Structures are given as C-alpha cells and as structure tokens.
Length: 163
Image 1 (cartoon, rainbow, N blue to C red):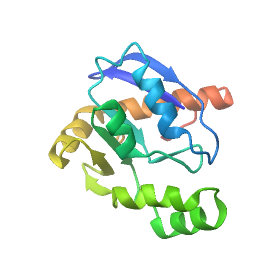
Image 2 (cartoon, one colour):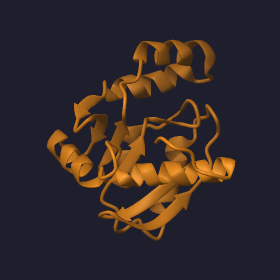
Image 3 (cartoon, one colour):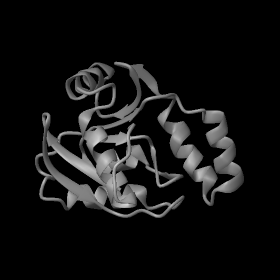
C-alpha cells in the first residue's frame, strides 16, 4: 500500500505499508500509517482509490474517519458491480459478510466530476472541488495517480500505464 502526500499539486512525501491479501487489517494499517507519519498534523483529507486494498481487504471508511478525524474520499473511475462483489465476498472470502456490511453501509458511489465517489466528512460539493482541483491528467486525482504508479513500481519493478 502506497500513499502519496500532496500539498496542492506538489508531491511532499510518500507513505508505504503492508496489508494482507483479502485480510482484515487495511483500516488499522491505514490509520497507523497516517497518524504516525510526519505529515499527520497537516493532512486535511485522505483519498482512497477504491474501498478495498489487496483484493478484498476492505477499509472501514467510517472507522478510519473516526480515528483520523479528517474527511475520507473514496474515488473510483467505474461503478463497481456490487452484486458480483457481494457474491464473491459471501462465497469465497473469509469474513466476507462483515466486509460486505462495510461496503453496503457506505452506500453506492455517487457520480462526481467524471468519477464515482463515496465520502465521509465532506459534502458532495467539496468532493467535486477536490477532484476538479487535483485531477489534472485525466479524471483521477493526481495523488491517487501518483500513488498507483509508485505502488506498481514497488510491486513489479516498474510502473504500468493506466491508473
């Protein structure tokens, strides 16, 4: 898991942590990584590219917001097929029912500025302002694009194309 810390459109730092594939430690790891970083006091928002990391290690967005006390904005380019996600979680993933409840509790993604979002701690208008300000090379905000490229390089030795 890689986090790119930005001040506006300038990269200020990078965070790196590990989560288990299909595990249950994404929320705890994210909270620790963010709150113990040297950037913690300046952070105003956590952006996530999707609600699940490393397969189905589902982030408890409300729980993360409760711990960090800053807005959380989840961004995806396409609407997930929630019926397929639900079936896969309930049939194949340990703790799938709990993970599905986290996803269902957050509600369906909303269309905003060419992407889909789920959010806690900020309005839909604020979410749109953030995306429009940070999405300078396509529809994905630059901090997510950068983190994705760095994570790809760490995992495979080089970054891939599309975010």
